[in-house]
Image 1 (cartoon, chains in turn blue, cyan):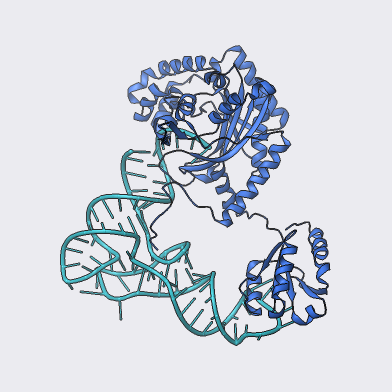
Image 2 (cartoon, helix red, strand yellow):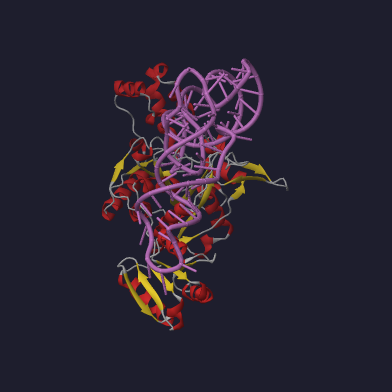
Length: 427
RNA sequence: GUGGAUGUAGCUCAGUUGGCAGAGCAUCGGGUUGUGGUCCCGAGGGUCGCGGGUUCGAGCCCCGUCAUCCACCCCA
């Protein structure tokens, strides 16, 4: 007790029981992503600080107070990635992907870092699954990304997800809308909550999703709340309508949320998010949107794009709470006697080319090995008794059926193959 | 960053007005060197998060600190 070191605040260890579930989820996601034609991109965990500062927006919370920023020994100004998109687009430009083909579908996963006060579902080191579709301005791209987003969750057993969608327009129309909001709220300005007053100057759109009930009463009193969708220009409007049509064509259920504003400044047009109530206050499971000006902001040619990030820690939290266990394959446990230990070692190595095999390495007695076998949950027991071994035989016991048979060691692999195939499970 | 709650065995938690640190589960051993998961018996395991203070005496009271949880901010 009271170990000298503990994991830094907001970080945690994932033990084998946890990582089994994580791997299951990652494998399921990989399958979906492959079928959608996405390729995996791996980028550095840290990049120039400036890259994140510029893309996220100087006024964003990420830049203001959440970045893990440091100088390396060469005095370079670096930061641990607080999100994936900036690094992905940097790689896209640096590697000249735009010249190889017009459209790229890229996914990434790994830890991301944000300095903030931890609580359940919020960590300083957390994990995202990130997808970007770079190069297409078409509303069909937005719709496909949202569909992929939903399909990933469905692969994890989430049914009936509600996807919140909104259009945040272009930066110019967003600014115009902010002005309209300010004018609309002017008559009641002094009665707004402190939070809302502050947000009115920093990010007026955020005022709308305040949790303050007094503010909501004021909104009702004013009536005729201006809506972001009403100030969209014709092109944005047409894009928005086409995205919704695309979702309907794909059979994806969605809800329009006029108050939905993403935390990062670079979003244009489409924005979307998914929440799960069982998570409490930190309920966002994932979100994303279109970022048509971002590549240009990084010094590249005008390149449209749309992407999203899924919070794996939160998704896994929900999966765990549902009591889901990663399916475990059938495994084999070898039980040897004093006269057959060497032979058991050889047999274990051979079988391990194909099956998950446990074999005592401590020269323990028969009883102890049987107990260990029971605890390990192995489906098959290979019992190597001295007398049978002399006759060229071993016993194979199937715990599932309770049956036991005697066979030649050379026939073991095939017997196991047949039995595991019969139940459709693999080791 | 703000406000609040909680830290006792690997885990979940008892612990009375301040008076010898406990249970269940888990672990290990035995019953049981040729058929396990059950059962029975036994054992190990604790600077009571950490540091300081009050006291004859602190798991309990006080201060600080670290961590977790809840809410806010914000997000994943």
